[in-house]
Image 1: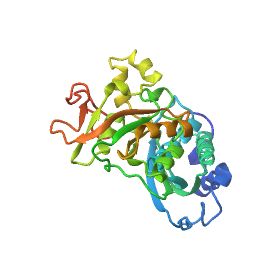
Image 2: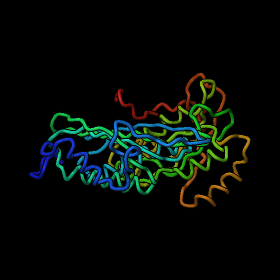
Image 3: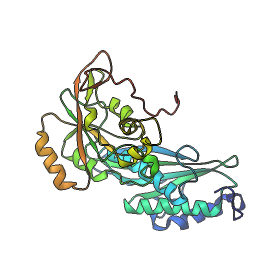
Image 4: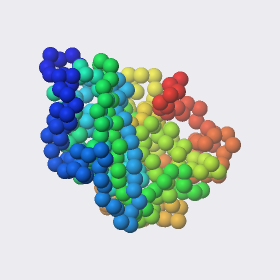
Length: 322
């Protein structure tokens, strides 16, 4: 992406690059003033709906490397933003995309990056309405997407109640083998949970289940987790064979699974809920992994078998890698 002999970004001026981006995106970016072309995009009002806004970055060397293609990197940026909207039970509408790049970036690599952006955006009817361009030192690349959506009844974090069962979609662990850039954000599932007033709290699993679990209960509650029920992906088993970590630890701590973690309101019958889920989402596994309990003074997360804290739980932290 930085080493080819082809055209570089520094060979184009900013106006030419913006025009290229418009061509690459095609009808994924609407005409001005909704799309690219003015100082601000003018978004239409959304009656009877809450507005959602989220932002995610994609950094070369941190969130992706040369092991994946430019299209796959662009795809990942869109999908991880969509996963945030899914975790609120929302509908994606618009996004801005800012590119911070070295001038020695290969021009064709950026074109292919936008191809991935366009493909994923079109799949979920997301419109790119603006952004920014900024130069970085050689061999650096970052892309920042801010996504806008709506939800009639957003589902928040930290709102779970005592006795609420805890559920997770899909399987966990080993996402670095492919899933971190190739997955389906659980938009339909999140929308159904929100609009039918089923989930009391919900997050998407970005930094690892071990970390995201802490977001569900209020400060006056804790979590009882049944480790035997954690759905472990085959990729977690594959990676565990190459390391000293167990598949279970990888499922709890790896991150970038982009599954929905939520609590079901305890007034709802779990058996009927699970039956409805299977009918509506037959290709999306759902697993009950624990429940919300009274505050435990020892830890926020308690092992259901031992009734003690789980000493090896550690999830990803952007600024504390110890």
